[in-house]
Each structure stands twice: as structure tokens, then as C-alpha cells.
Length: 494
Image: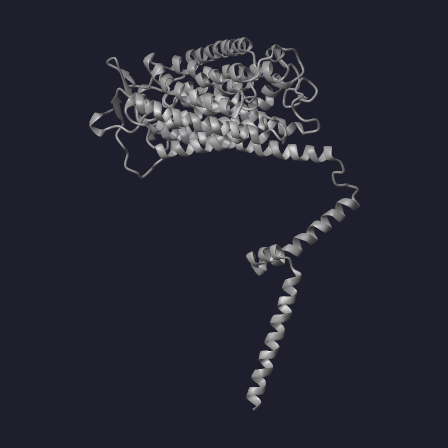
């Protein structure tokens, strides 16, 4: 009897407890109950702690007289600053993409050298742009050059740079712009890979970012003479990519081809050692471009998503057309051309991403993908050795993208041509002078034996894959120079 009574009593208590729990649960909205179930008890304890910290922080700020942003303008400045900071980080991270891409397209004995160049070039560019470049580009001066604000003391809001939202810290604009400047120098790295002296590359990069890039950038993006004419280059098809491409072309021409690249009247393809690296680098660059192009809006506006979509459409179209073009031309779809086709589409749309329609973006990117396939073959035919196709991607497709603004966008085609020629001429002359001076003074090319051993050992004294069995250097006739999917029977040891 007693045991039955106890069981009945316990069942009654459990039923009351369940009913009470259900009543409490009914007081909590269903979405909130779902959220609470997804967190562990430890995380649930953190919620009131975080709320307490916020309250205390706000109380402390109020006590010190630090009021929260009270106006929409102040909130907009904060939002724009965060947006530009995020885009700056994306563009800076593109250096990792360039490094992986170039390392994958080149031989393993030069991987350390390529990665070192792509890493240190951002440091070099940052210091050069801080000391000189930012002042020449955005300092107060005349339509041809900025003349004030050296050592990062220029006032971009006070002279011509009205595109930046009023009130956004100048430090944010500097960080965003230095990321662009470093990109121009990084482009050069790929075209001169596997035979340039590390010291010569660093000196050239410093001068390119500190002077040449900054001066031509002033013409377009700081109320300079090309801007006054109506030249349009929204995110830098010419200002960034063609400048880097022209410098790369001149450097590759003066430096000469790699040993064994052109022999007996034939073009010998020197295969890259890791197409996985190259593919990953391409994807990193694709993602980084969503900071490059949308960030050039310079504010978190409603136009940012539109720019992102045109950018993505052009990249997709470039990859597809390059795939089928190389398939038709060479009989097989070449992964290296797929990669460069995507990048060609991105470079091509950079100038007009804010001005053209979605369909126009697809056309621009698609044409860029076709152009890059034939451009790589053209430069090989005139014996310009570009291991990664940087000149074809950034110079040729940068020119196409700038012209496309006058065809599909709001720009004037004649003005666009004038801008392309002016910036190209200045960059070529500047680059030729610097490369030539370096050649006759410290030299720009490593010794033949050092090139055969590989720049990892000769320039850095280390290997990228220490402990792994080395592959024989191989050459194959009749390739594009950056393709790797070759029949072993067609290769010869080098």
C-alpha cells in the first residue's frame, strides 16, 4: 500500500513538473526556444555576462562624456570605414593568391623565391607608398603630380579626392590604396619569374610603387588631367593592371627568356610543378576581387551588390570562353588557360564594373577569355617569356577592359584610347630606364649556373620541399609555356 502510494505521489509530482515546464516554455517564443536549444549551458551563461559587459561599458563611456553616435551621418561614416577596411583586407589577401598562382605555374626549384617575392613586395610597397607614393598620387599639387604630404601627411579629402565619403579616416583610404599599389608590383613578379635577381626585383618594385604607379594614378583618380578629360577607369584596369602589365612586359623583354625556352626555332613549354597551387591561387584572387571592385565604390552604397554581380559574371564568362577556346585551338581544355581566362575576365571588367549591364559584363569577360588564349601564344611567338601569362592577363585584358567602358559604358572611346596610350607610354619609358640602369649596375639576371640549380638554393639557400624526391626539369615542344598536362613521351630532361 505504501509503495503504491509513493509511486502515485511521484507520478503526480512529475506530471506537475512537466506541466510547469510546459507553461514556462509557452511563455518563451518558439524562435527563441530554438536558439536556446542550439547552445550549450556554458554558452547560455555567457549571454547575460556579455550583456552586463555592454551595460558597464556604456555606463563608463557615458560617465566620461563619450556619447554614442547620435546622427545618421556619423553612423554612415562608421559603416563606410568598416566596409573599406574589410575590402582592404580582401585585396591584401590577394597577395597570397598571386603567390600560390605563380608558384604553381613555375618549377619547384624556384617556389621559395616566388613566394618570398610575393610576400615581401607588400611590405616594400607599403613603405614606398607611405613615404612617397601616396603624396604623389593624392597630395595637393597640379593635374600631373601631387607635391605635398610626404611620409603620409597628404590630405586626400582636401584635394580632388571627393569620391571618399566626408569624415572617413584618411588611414582607411591609405590602407585601401596601398593594397592596390602592391598589386601593380606583384603583377611584375610573375612575368620575370625563375631568372631575376631578388635584389633587382625589390629595387624595381620600390620605384614602381613609389613613383610611376603613383604619378599615373594621380592623373586618373585624383582630379588629374585624364580625369578632367573624362577618362574612366573605375577600379583600375589601366591604373593598376595595365601599369603592372607594361612594367612586366618591359622587364621580361630586357631580362630575356629562361634557359631552354626557345631553342632550335621551337617554343618549349616549361611545365609548372603544382597546378593545385595555381588553382587555389586563382580562387583566392577571385574572392579577393570582391574587395577590389566593390571596394572601389569607396562607401557601403546600394551599388555594391551590383558591382559584385558584374564582377562575378565577367569572371565566369572569361573562364568558360577560355576553356572552350583552348579546347578548340589545342585539342584539349588546358587548366592553365581556364585559370587565366577567369583572371582575364576579372581584369577586363574592373574598369567598367559599376557602369555596364549584366549582359555587357558577360560579353566583356567572355571576350577577355578568348583574347588571353591567343595573347599567350602571340607573346611566345615574339619570344617574350612570361611564365604565368601575366602580361596577357593584366596588360592586354586591362587594355580591353578600359576600351570596353567606351563601348558598353558611359566613357568616350577616344578619351579611353588617349588614357591608355598616355599611361602606357609613361610606364614603358619609366620601366625601361629603371630596368636598364639596374642591368648595367647590379645586374638583373642570375648567373646561368644559378638558374639551372634553381633560385631557391642560389638566392635563398633553402628548398620549398626539403626531404622530397626532386623531379627532373622537363621541357616539351610546341606548348604555350604555361601548360602542364603533357605526355611524358614528349618531354626531355633539362
